[in-house]
Amino acid sequence: MTLTRQHCEEGTISYICIDWRHAAEMLAAGGSVYRELKNIVVWVKSNAGQGSLYRSQHEFVCVYKNGDGPHQNNIELGRHLRASSFL
Image 1: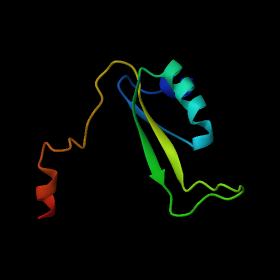
Image 2 (image 1 turned 180 degrees about the vertical axis):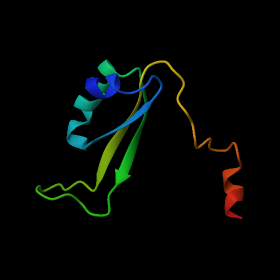
Image 3 (image 1 turned 135 degrees about the horizontal axis):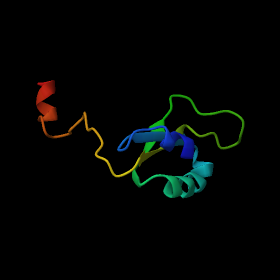
């Protein structure tokens, strides 16, 4: 994470995937490296993983912000009346 942060511009957003078993380690490491945890997203996969009794069909994606600079928001939900684009 440190190397990733060092090679990204100020204000960039990093998406880092982790399984549920290591979520605590991810949050601890990310909290010591990145400026802000923006969100935790759940990626629901089409097939469950293999190799254990409890096969995960999802992963967590931790969304971290690098530094204090502004990040670029290309989505701007609600600003352009998202629902009207489907009419």
